[in-house]
Length: 278
Image 1: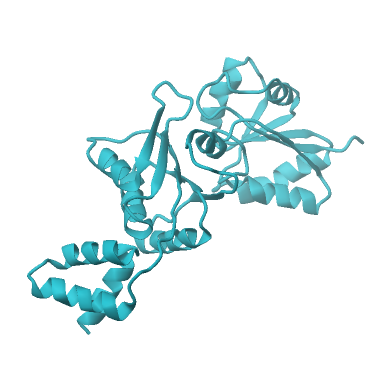
Image 2 (image 1 turned 30 degrees about the vertical axis):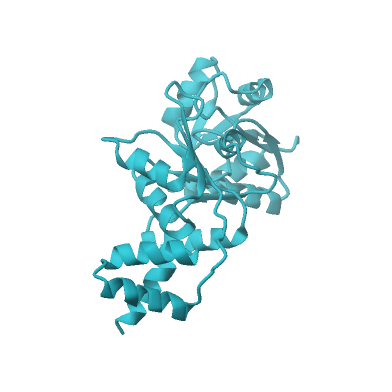
C-alpha cells in the first residue's frame, strides 16, 4: 500500500493571488484538507474551484482529530494541512500533528509560500540579517513586559503578531520596557486592500494608534530594542528621584526624567521609586 503523506500548505495572507502553483496542485490532489477554520478555507477553495473533503483542525478540536487524521494517513491517503492565512504550524496548533507524524514514521512535506512575519521583515527597513520571531506576546501585561525584557536582552529585531484589541497596550509596553525611541514597523492588513505600513519610533506608533477611534485588522510588528548603556547606578538614580520629588515633580514625571538621564527603561526606575517608599 502506498504511504500516506502530510502536506503543510501555505495559503495567502490576504490577496488570493498570492498562492503558488504547487500549493494549488497539492490542494486539488489531497484526499483530505485539514483547516483551522473551514468557513475561511472554503472561500479559497471555491475561488480556485477546488473540491476537496474539508475537515476542521483547530486548537479546540485537535485532540479529537489526531487519531482520525493519523488513521487516514496510515491508510495511504494524502492530507493537506492549512491555516487561516499564511504558513501552517507558525503560531497555530499544527506543530503537534507534525510531531506525531514524524514519531509514527509518516512522511511530512512543506509547500512553502506566504508568511506574514517574513513579509513584515522585508518591509521594515531594518537590518534583519538576524531576527527573532516571538509569535504572540502574552495577553497579560505583567507577563508581556517580562517577555519584552527578555527580547531586549537578545539585541536583535523581533517580529510579533498582535490583535487589534491589544495593539495599543502592546505598543505602550514597548515604550515602557524597550524605550520610546525604539524603531518599529507596524504592518496592518498585509497584502489586503487597506494594507498599512507605519515606520517610526515606538512612541510615534503608540500615539498614532491610541488616537484612532477604532483599530481593525491583524498586525505583524517588527521592533528593534537596543539596550542602552546605564550611566547611573541605583544609588544615583534614587538620589535623583528624591531630588525631583522634593522639587514638587510628580512621581510619573520624575521616573520619566530619570529614565532618560540614566539610559534605562522606565519600569526599572519605577522599581527603584517603589523601594524609596519602603
